[in-house]
Amino acid sequence: MGFFERLKIEASGEWRDYTEHPFTNGLADGSLPEAAFRHYLAQDYLFLVEFARAYALLVYKSPKLADMREAAAGLSAILDVEMNLHVKLCAGWGLSASDLEQTSPAVEMLAYTRYVLDAGMRGDLLALKVALAPCVIGYAEIATRLASHPDANAAKNPYHFWIAEYAGVPYQEVATKARAHLEHLANLYATPAREAELIAIFKEATRLEADFWEMGWRVGQPVE
Ligand SMILES: Cc1ncc(CO)c(N)n1
Image (tube, rainbow, N blue to C red):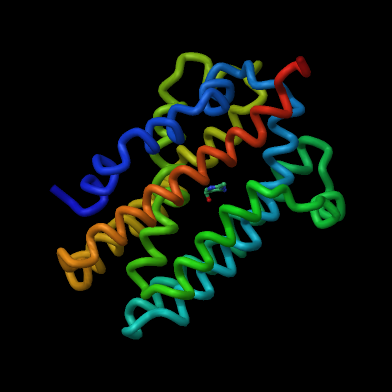
C-alpha cells in the first residue's frame, strides 16, 4: 500500500468528515446557500495567498535541486493558474480583486494556514508535504466525487464551474504529481520512528480542512 493510502486509513474519521462534509454535498447538488459559498470563496482567496507562501517554503526546505524544481513548479501553478481562475470565479460572484484584498481573515483560515506553515518551519520537506497533502490531493478527490453527482453539471447548478475547475484535467494532474512526489519522499525519509509524527500532522491538517468547510457552512445556516 502507498504512503498516502496509509495516511488516509490512519486518519479515516477525519478524512471522511473533510471529504464528505455537507458543504461539499451542497456544491454537488447546487443546494448550498449562496452566502455560504461567497464567504468560503473570499476566505479561500486569502488561503491561496498563504498556500503560495507554503510552496515557497517547500522550495527552501528542498534538500535536492529536483525537489526544488518540483516545488517551484507548484508555486507557479498556484500564482499563475489557480489564483487567476479563482479571481475569475470570484468576479462571476460579484467579488472584485479589491473586495478580496479587503476581506478580513477568519480564524479558521488563519488556524489552517498557520498550522501548515508551522509544520513546515519546524519540520523537513516531508513533514510540510504531509501537511499540504489534504489540500492538494483532497480537493482533487472531492471534486472527482462531486463531478459524478447527477446535478453537478446541470446548468442550474451555480457551483458547476467550481466543480469543473477542480475535477478538470489541469488540477487533477497537479494533484497526481503532488501525490507521486509525496510517495517518493516517503520512500526516502518516512522511517518507522517518524510514522506517529507524520500521521499526527496529516490528521491535524485534515481536521482543519473540515473546519474550513464548516466555516462557510455555518454562514449559510439559519440563525437559531
Ligand atoms: C481550503 C482549501 N484547501 C485546498 C484548496 C486546493 O487548492 C483550496 N483552494 N482551498
